[in-house]
Structures are given as C-alpha cells and as structure tokens.
Amino acid sequence: MNIYSLTDVGRVRDSNQDAFWTGNLSEDTALCIVCDGMGGANAGNIASQTAVQLIADYFTRSYRKEMTAKTSLEFLCHAISSANIQLYDLALKTPDLTGMGTTVVAAVIGPDYVAIAHVGDSRCYLLGENLQLLTRDHSVVQNLIESGKITPEQAKVHPRKNVITRALGTEENILIDTDVFPRIAGQRLLLCTDGLSGFSEPEEIEAVFSETEPSQIPERLIALANQHGGGDNITAVTVEL
Image (cartoon, rainbow, N blue to C red; front, side, top):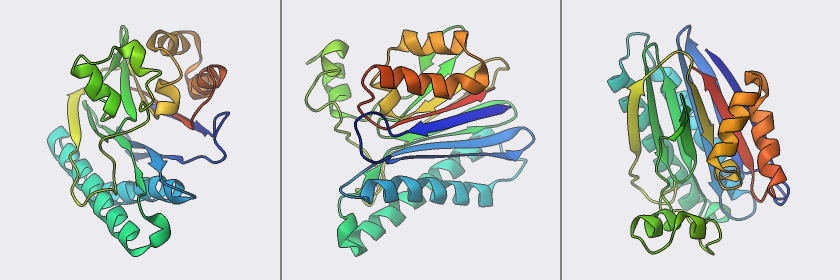
C-alpha cells in the first residue's frame, strides 16, 4: 500500500488551516486523516492540527491487528468524538479560540476493507473504473441541492457555498457519517479538502489519476486547483489500495 500526500496554502489565503496525518499501523493496515480548520486568527490552524493529532493518537493507541472492519470503524468514531469534545472544551477555556472548528475525513485501510468517517465538507473519493464520491457534504448548499432549491451548478457560486452545517469543536456532541466497503487491489482512494473539490471538476480529477505517476498525483491535483484560482487551502491524500 502506497500513500502520497501534500498540502498547499493556495493562491488567496494568507495561512494554511488544513492539516493531515498518514501512517502505517501494520504491514497491511493504514490510517489517513484530513482536516480543514475554521476560526479567526490562528484558531483554524489550531483546530485542524489538534484534531488530526488527537484522532491519530487515539486510534493508534487502540489499534490491534485482529480488529475487524466493524471494530475499526467503531474506534475511528470514538477517536473523532473524543477529539470533538477536547476541541470544544479548549475553545470554552480559551477566549481567542472561541468559534474554532474543523472538518474531518478519515479512513482506515485494512487488509480487506476500507472504513471511512467524516464530518463537514472534506471529501473521500474512490477511483475504480471511474471516480466515485463516497461522502456527503455537511453544508448549506448541499442541503439546498437536495431540497431542489438550487442546482449543483448554482451551488458553485452560491454566497454561502463555504458554510458547513457540522464541524468538530463547535458543539458538545457531533454526528459522524460512516461507510465501509471492500478493499480491492488496483483501486485508489482520495481524501481532500474543499480547496480541491471546490476548484476542480470530477472529470479533471479523474484525468489526473489516469495520466500521472502515483507519487505525483497530489502535486498535480494541487496545481489543478491553483490553476482554477486556488481560492482556498488545498490538501490531497491518495492511497493505492
């Protein structure tokens, strides 16, 4: 299993509030985490960096080789919930961090399964025969699309396109979306922030995967988003299943 990752500030932001963590837990199991922070001053940086470290620490301490897809997903959700309450408490105790939060998308790649969990609008894609979005954005525009009030094209330019409806650290309790599916050799996984998904089209992402050496894919994806304006921080983590 090969994992490649890269983050970039983009062409508009002054600082990078994205954070990621990747690591091998055994010869056939790995953990990948991507977070996109929000909040004034450096609060977003603290939220995302703290979240990835808390989630990684919790899960790596809990990991056992005999864990199944079900138990891996349960521990991943426990890790995210624990990080949420710690971020929430930190914001309550620290006035400068009031209102901070972060998205999260995380994946445990096991011997024969992939377990994913997410909160917010950072995404997970699977590339098999074609590119498939595995997560649902927790955002205002996604709710509007699903209610039929706007089209996906209108969502791209909607004034509230960056407003998310769920985030770690903003409430004491958090609802986490999850999924489990078989690990199939030859497929690829992409975890990314909306700095990539919001500034590139699915067919462009798919083309990068098909035309690029695996180790260069994150760099090419970031270049693609920057070519389209680079209006946000950009993070891409790819996994060769």
